[in-house]
Image (tube, rainbow over all chains, first blue to last red; front, side):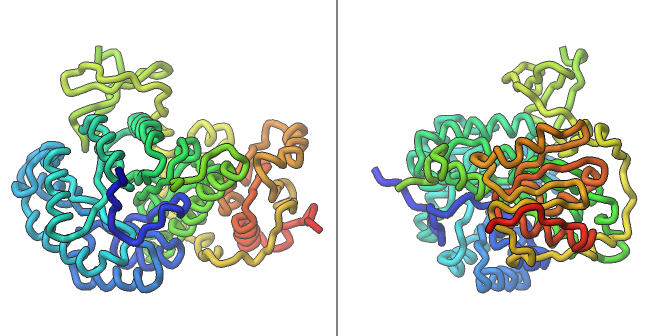
Length: 299
Length: 179
């Protein structure tokens, strides 16, 4: 049975792809350095933000849309005092601001759906409710979002179901996990997906690192905000070797916030991530050329 | 059992936590303290934070927080992803800063090119496959000798570009150029 194609300007033959996650003017500068950007819907609520999206698309940047559920739930948690994991388990209609998010989600997909690389489903309320919401998106908007599997809370059977049904699947929930746990579930998901070599996996919130170099053959992508380290935590900014964090930069790379060099520091992060993405592609290509790995996403 | 271990609780995700015991296995536990699974080969705390302090110490580097900087190096380097100014080719070999070596060769098949350099290396030498083009402007590069293998001409060219911007063109010596 043919798998359902998720919507968007997606080429399954494209090599590994790392998306810089962010919003606002910094992604415009970043998009000039690395043409793959993820914007969460909460960063697309204003007309100014929409103009940035249009500029990115017009300049040929591949844009992935995240549903903005994390921000929505974080806000609900702060307003109500409810622990964040419990908010994620709520039915969408019970989360404050959901109606506004749904309308914006529908508008963005109806307006730019044929130009974006893909969009993440609205993954709220657990596997069953997320499936209902996804079916609503497909029937009302005529658009197939990329479903999300949450290794921490969803059963493996659900992952298998998604792999058997869709051409792309997101693996989520990594932002809230520690390194060892994250490494385990990424490895587990990649191994389990080997039975479906035609499925593209996207790891939400996972920075491109040496971990990806050892994964089984599978078309894949990831996104993170870690490219903003030169801005957020400049002293920890490091150079990589084979995508492993390797060596701390000299102190002179650290900007003084009074010098208002944050945009340049962000650009540095974007350039370095572009290099890292290039390594991921190159290493994968090299393994394929030497017969050590199957081509990505074979037809 | 938890009091025998260093309990690390993730503030953002309270349904599970990692219990770490230095030098041994770690466990993923639920809020009641029951072990959900054993986590093999856990990252050390500083690795989880993305900092290889063991490497820092081996290099004699500082670990304390910095309060900020002048950004002079950030100003000096070019930030673009265009074609590099240094047109390197597969097979080229470069000496940087009088001690680092950059091999622009295949990492898997061309090991005979760079293995002899490592065979004669001392304890101050670090092997860096697929080096970040910014690698020579790190603290580590100031106190260690780097043997770098970069199969990608594009990335090798950018490495030379960044190095030249930081240390000058005279700091780059071409040891071998493909005919």
